[in-house]
Length: 455
Image 1 (cartoon, helix red, strand yellow):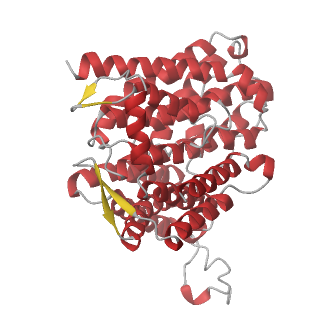
Image 2: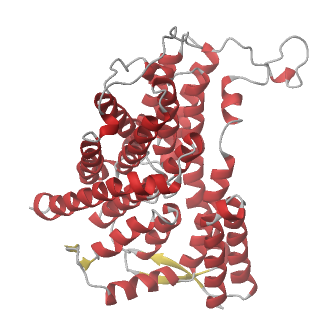
Image 3: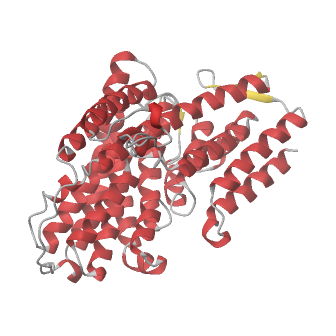
């Protein structure tokens, strides 16, 4: 029966990775795979287990209990993401991201490259790499009129955004999963991964800055400055970014799950959004009665209507599908076999050897396969303590490895859609830069772990 479960998972996984060929949204196979896996477990009365990380063993449990346990852990991630997405959409409602365009004063392509790379690195750590890419590609389209030059900039923005998301607990879905799953804490994640992530961004940008594509100045059209859509744009930008950054501090102080802090931040941002909004909000006019045609479209309602629910449902499906395999003990036993048979290239960490090779393969694999299920699987495989360097290395590898292919990360996929970037163009021009950055950062991570933090 376990063979059937593995076949269902592999078929579902292939359907997810081939969504562009099949022209079927990846949320459909993810949800179907999740439902089928749990249905087979229930109908065949298979034994389910909970991993005791303290004793590093499996403990028998009931399917209702383990299903509720995994649903609760998944819901924590989804509610957190919903809050963050809503805050970002509220900022966009007030055209807050237009404020960033005002900081761009230079016409030098080389200086612009560094400026956009640094912006991508910082922004992705706060509003996640996907949103940062959307914001910066939109600005690039207004600043750089030459499409060929813009493609080069976009490629480097993808690398910088993924690198920036890797060191922040709110910068990438995978790091958020590790943080909420109590595998890492925010201070030590930053301490271990920030410098490798900087190297991962700086090395490709430095190499690319020597290319002919980034020599000279950009060609600009003589256009009048665009009037800001809202006078509260910059205020909402700083308020929204500050509210998101506040969440890790809230967790550290209260020891409550991160989604609680995110809901508080959303409430604060939404309050100011309602105050600043010119439209009146009245629940009695949801059908557009009278003259209040915008009554049901307050900033909060408008922002919630733009949330990417397909992404949320995809995460629900894939995380619960991986949880089904974890509940059967498959991932636990697979990890044991890996540690027994693969050459251990890591260092001893709290009495247990962990292979750097496995983590590097995970990073490279995330360029081909979605990094969310890979990290979800690794969370069920490794039974090392919280803040073990393994989790920090996984955060780095899964976050930055996806840059090697344009379809390997959410940032790459959205940029591909916005700029119609050819897969093979990216593979030829940008992939090797991403690989060099990935390996450089990995080497720096290992050196810091072995000779600095353990000194």
